[in-house]
Image: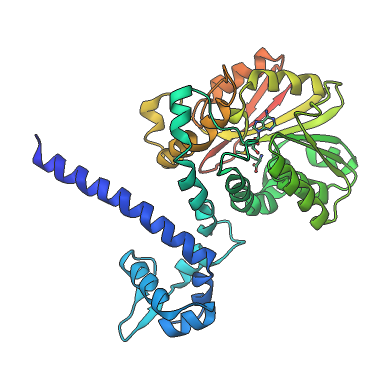
Length: 356
Ligand SMILES: C[S@@+](CC[C@H](N)C(=O)[O-])C[C@H]1O[C@@H](n2cnc3c(N)ncnc32)[C@H](O)[C@@H]1O
């Protein structure tokens, strides 16, 4: 027994346990508006925080003490707590791309899902995004929407689409566009608002996500976006789409091969498919060294792999199952001949332009 290793590992395990507990506390702070109550207020007492958030002071004081111990909020003595501008940006802001409170949004659902997941380990069948009965799915839908909205609204049209030659011009002129696995429809609605002469179609399997798609379209006032439930209406394989997108979902599919073939058949001869999917290095040795490896593998066991194994013989790629060469092979098997990785840096995802 290596005593130093034992000590280091037990510290690491305790840190993991504390991280989980503090995650719950960050979730509570976001949910109850505590960070927002402190944002841009300067040093503030627990009485003042409680009054601003409309909560009971004693519980607020204990939460503040924990936040100070965890190093998220500063304790300045004399009962004064301070949310620094940096902590405020990360924990109290919503629109900034760097803000992080939204990461914790589905903490209760993720935790609740732990009682469901052992069944997947025993049966080999995962929990589908469309399976609303089995807990956690509504949390996943809302979480993804809140997590990704700033990126869709601030980056997709402004930075990513211009990387595809001539795409902006054709969308301005009017194109038929499909987004498969469209989640809550934020990408579709954002693009539909930006390109009113184009027609946008979203395909989804999760009923709760489809409800959100329609609500989002109404709220944004877009009339050029329509959403379909893939179980009732498949992507039409009629060569009519000039542009197809899949954001963060190829690896979630039980049959990505069938998806690629359907997209190939749905597309005009010079159409293009924008794939955004998690970056994988190809080997486990390299993958576990990536900065978001822990998050990625945990999200896979509890979400992506669940979806990709939710039918018998599901492909089961999981978050890191499709490195660029495997993605290229998948698209070539479907008939695509041109595969280009875009020069876009993202903490989690790679970007590919694929053409027939
Ligand atoms: C990680 S989420 C990404 C959602 C959305 N593209 C976004 O970026 O917000 C993956 C999505 O793929 C959907 N999905 C999984 N299997 C599908 C299928 N066979 N057909 C259509 N959508 C599917 C899930 O319901 C889920 O909304």
